[in-house]
Length: 394
Image (cartoon, rainbow, N blue to C red; front, side, top):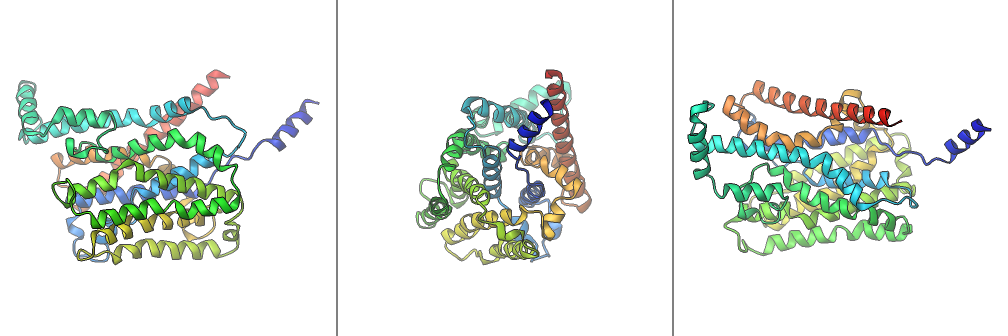
C-alpha cells in the first residue's frame, strides 16, 4: 500500500524545471562583463591591434541585460506551479541573504582600497601610517561617507551623481530586488494568461526600452555634467531593467506552452544558436561614434534584449554546438557561481592594479583564474553547507 502511494505521488509530482546549458550562458555573460571592465581599466591594452576583437570586449556583446532575461526565465520556471503560494517576504529575505552579504563585504573592501589609492601611498601602510593614510585618502575622495551609504542602501544607481562609484556592478542589485518583489505576484498572474496575451506581452515589453533609447538620443545632456554621466544613469536606472526581467518570465511561459518545441528538431537549435550569436556580435559593429547616441543605445541595449531571449530559448533542449559546450561539467560548475565574479571583480581589480601591472597577458589570466576559482569555491561551500543543514533537519 505504501509503495503504491509513493509511486502515485511520484507520478503526480510536478517535474522540476532545470536547463543545464543556461549555466554555461551565465558564465559567458559574466566573463564578457569582467573583460569589459578590464578593458576600461586599460588592462587589455596589448589587444588594441585586434580591431575585430576590441568592440566585442568594450561593448560588450553580452551586457547586463542578459542577466535580467536569464533571471526572469529561471525564477518563472521555479514558480511554475500556478497553485503554489509564494510568500513575498521570505522569498525576498532569501535573495537578500544570498546576495546582499557579499555586496556589503565587497563594498567595504572597495572603500578601503579607494582610501589607500587616494591617500597617495604606493606601499601598504604600516601600523604607524594607517591614521595618516586614512585621513589623506578620505580628504581626497568626493563625498566618501555619503557614497558608502548610497551603495550599502542600494540607492546609488538611482542618484549616481551624489556619490562616487565604489563597487559599481552592485547597481544591479537595486533593480534585481525590485524584480524579486514582484516575482510571486507576476508569476501567478502569468499562469492565468492564454497564448495570445503572452505573445502580446512578448512584444510590448520592448516598448519601454525603445522609448528609453529615443529619449536618451534626443534629450541632450539634461542636468548631467556630460555624456558619460548621463549614459551611466540611463544604463543603470532601475525601472527600465524590470521589463527585461519580465520578458524572461514571459519567455518561460511561452516555452512551457510548447511555443518553442520546433527547436527540439535535429539541427534546428544549432542553426538558431549560430544565427542569433552572429546577430548579437554583429550588432556591435553597427554602432558608430558619429551616429545619434539614441541609435547606439538602441543597438546596444534595446535590440540585444530580444536577441538574448532568442539565444536563451535556443539552448533549452540541450542540442546544438553552444548548448553542448555549455553543458560540459566544469563549465556548468563555474557558470553556477558566475554572478559572484560580477559582484566581486572590481574591488579585486583595484587591489590587483596596486600589486602588479594587469596590462600583461599572464597577469590577466591569473586575475581571471583567481576571480572565478574563488567564486566557484564559495558557491560550492554554500551548496555543501545547505545540504548539511537539510540533513540535520531530517
